[in-house]
Length: 399
Ligand SMILES: Nc1ncnc2c1ncn2[C@@H]1O[C@H](COP(=O)(O)OP(=O)(O)O)[C@@H](O)[C@H]1O
Ligand SMILES: [Mg+2]
Image (cartoon, rainbow, N blue to C red):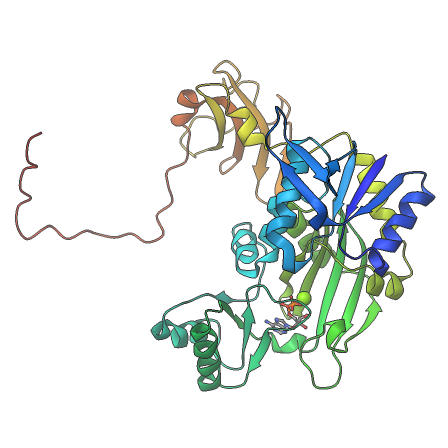
């Protein structure tokens, strides 16, 4: 395979290890400075130039996009995606992971446990938000911080308010997060490659520091992960669309709480702590997946007029309960079931013999009109009874 490692730090430990691991396996790997690409949309097909010359063919890329160049870096990755070059981490995945709020919004939708978090803008909403996440001490985070910079522990509500107001006044967006006291000064970093955790470590903060980042003087030790932590890490990476990710979790009394998902995890700490060949695992995974470049499924499946993707819910009264997929009549209505979600499990490509249960969710491709009647009613968060208007509503003017 011919692999391009997109990085601005060719000499860093991680880049060197990835390059060596690729060479050891007989792959051709080049480190290309992300900022030297030119995106070219002038020709018939999406194209890329590098250092002023047309880019040669690559089978895969491994983006290592630093925080300071997210916009340009993800644009380059997206261009590779348009050119059907395999990437373990998509441009969307990288952009979503980079923003702590966006990441939390996406993860919370999928029942991943996170520390209670709030995001507000107006001064009047600050105090209630702090109270809602559990009061002081409370953690305040800049949306795009890394290495522990921009993560503050405020001991009292008043102090927290002052800090947040100050940051707001300088146009900084901040998250307000419950301080997970029992995990003080410790966290877990799980390195996810594909569908598994290939290495994990615990980071322990230095002295009375509460942030366990290695850049803040934290030390690392290998850990054997509890299955709950392993599952949370893998699911989080999958949901974010990242096949190579460092998932950070706090060890709370109620199990893992996912804090962030890093799309360019450093390898030095984890390889040193665990003595495992993480770089090799990443390269092997990419070599294995090269034939499956990212496809925006929804986009591709929507191009036939009248057809599309929808998630159907098996209602108690829908008549489907107890029937097998084969008997359900879906096939006759031109509806193909891609996956079946049942509670926390997913059955890909469910067979005709699978018997439907109440609450099953079917991800389907088919005629939109046929599927309309089966789309679940929109969930109402709170029931409301509307007041009648005081005056009768005047007729709309004609025309
Ligand atoms: N809600 C929290 N409760 C307890 N400790 C936290 C919390 N959030 C962060 N920390 C500590 O601070 C460190 C840095 O936070 P993190 O959100 O990972 O920011 P960064 O992206 O800068 O690493 C974490 O590794 C953890 O040790
Ligand atoms: Mg972190």
